[in-house]
Length: 629
Image 1: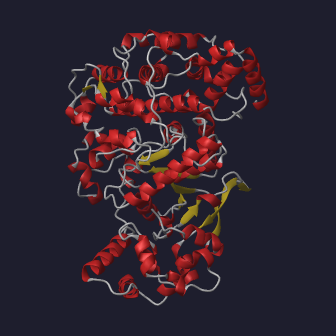
Image 2: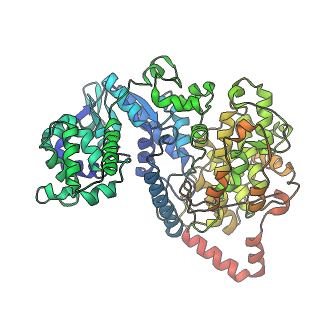
Image 3: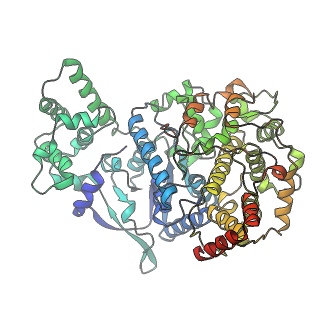
């Protein structure tokens, strides 16, 4: 999880960095850092469901700049959760903080750095479309990136402070100083101005031995020994130079480390500073410090063969940190699609840790979870299915059988899709599924706007101004449910080997556009639903029969559908129910519950009824909406 405060320390002492004009090289990129920073720094919408087309265009520009400078990008993504679970407390704290920020965003309308649900998928799809080399690790990406950077002797683009500890021959390029929008030209060559960090410069500046850097990271705070306990026992600020300010903790530790040559000497001396410790506690602390330090000892790269020859790393003793994947029953056929980022790493989280995480949604904390609507999909079950599939041999199942499984899970007969273009079949199925199960009932305008964007979003994109009115929580809740259903459907479709074509999300859905269309239909009386494809999709959605019984959120929890197989069922365990039901659960965020049945009979027309009953109120609302626009 990095060294807390180290980035701030480096910003204070920027002379540690060296100026660099980057070109003609390989560049290993921390994918998670990149898509977060690109989205958050772009000013794109965070609260209305995302601006995925604009984000895809931003990624295209970024990749084009790299290629214009003869830089070959290799982007590496995180995979499953940490197997050791040593970082649970840190992860929980981050989840709680994100929950609070999402609630504040919903209340205030301000951007609070909440990543829209499908950003990571759009990132992967866009890179694949651009033929960029991408690898998704089985676990945390940092050590894999560092190991390959050492072997290839190429720089790393990131802002994770762990990379400032790894001894990398070509160093680290902080993303915040990577000026890819300000390319310079020298003759016929183009360069990206940036800053470069290397450990030798850092160690020379603070006058410590390079081999002490991992010990510095361990003593500064680590996931094996409670950092608050360490700081309570030793105040490193007492060794800091005058004027250190908020970086005194780290600067004091670095000054203290100047007295040592090897890590074990420093650890023994640190234990003495901690005062009287019982033998067991002393051994526990020493073990934690050593374990943290060992994280910076890099194994041979597991990604090199993949990037060069397309060979996925095995689940074997060749890479000891992957052995648990084999023990947990992760199927061997999944290795290649996992590392190619064709398959969601959620399968690893559930098989290894019996849990999964959910994306944070911009909604009020007190509301029920929007992710509940998609639970039947996450349980990979289908209504009345007697099909028997084994996870270990799922890749060998007939395509028609896998399609049947997917459509039964979504509750849509295959014949209904005959008139729908292939790239829209999965989104249409998702919309049918959402309407059958979402709660509360969606307004007619929400469905119309959603179908318009699915069928002809390009015709409206750019024609409407971005939303300026206050966030409509009812519309937002419905769209959060729909995006959650789409994400779970995409994951199930991936697991089943894509029996339906995977749609390009950046060309499929735009949250801001749906909000604007709903607003115009409600307050301006506009109804632009004249597109032929719109009516085709609407017909399909209308012809799906309602469920036999009206199911509330509680019913959804009580009535699991028929299992495909016991093997597949374990992918989405029952513990999920408890985590989803409470918005304070650490694995989730604020979400909401939804239920929707037949489109014909269940639209709420509350808006139009109120307007017809009170014409004066309607006129005031219309004037107010025009002012907002």
